[in-house]
Length: 395
Image (tube, rainbow, N blue to C red; front, side, top):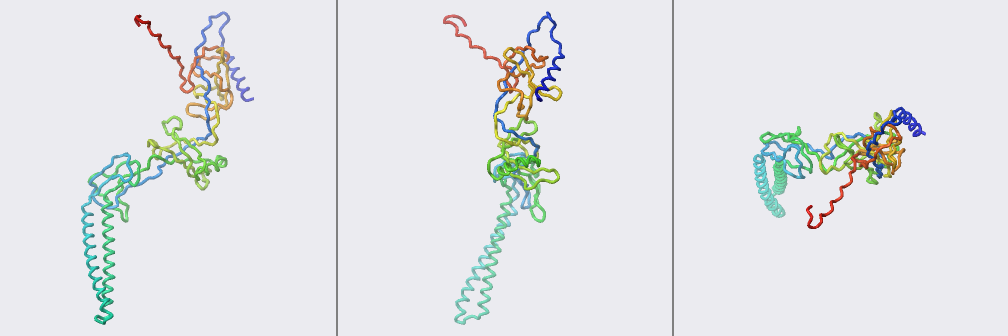
């Protein structure tokens, strides 16, 4: 009924146009590009606005204080796990390490001497050659020597660690942001206050995209989203960034929040999206297409071929005799450069897609030319190959 009313209104408007007078010179039909709708499997989806976050973000800070002698990374560089990024002057820490080794050697020597005395006292005590007090003093000295060795070993471990911390390495593969420290600067070590911030490293290859699903949609989609987050049948998402056409990045729903926000009436959903080329940067806004149904065949028409009249949308069809007709449409969502057509045309219809401004009224004859629905460019027939020249004849 809705299509019939729209058709009547469009025909009434088109009837106001003037037709050629009787006996007047007839203009040749204008050339019009025609193409059939694209038939493609498509799943119903909903569009949300989301924000990109890195899966892992690490602030690289110095754990020991000293002069930065080398910066081995540039702003924005991609780095591998365990790659050297900064070097801090090792000389003071090498001296501390050498002193710790000497202290351990002295402690070990005192321990060995105390052990000999304690062993000798243990042998002499049964024969009452020494007193019980002398025996106890020897055992106490041995225990103190053991503790001294343990403390010296701990000091050496700390010195070794500090020496290791003189080289700042990437804890994971990722991309460096702006390098905040340059060669010759003094880095502050960690302690009561955090160490000097050298750079920030974010993970790559995958990112998180966070978006909010309204409560009404959650009632419908909640079980499928939860199953996807729990590792079951994945709910696919496609993501597009500013300046990109369509939604070229693929991912899946991986985490669902455990409550609905009472202020917004929505629940936070997180998708994990592949980013092998490193083009999706944390902090960016993203268009998120959430798949809400199973793929099914649909008709797609290039959005630029759809005409508008007041609140109605329609296309011109062209029959085998080149006669045009108006077909009001019921449209669905946008898919790349297409619109999903729910009602109004069939798969085999020929749709006028170019030069439609030359169609002044339905029933007007046109000269149909094959065109491509995706690009709206005319399809030119390949020129036939020239016949080979006869033998002895000049080409």
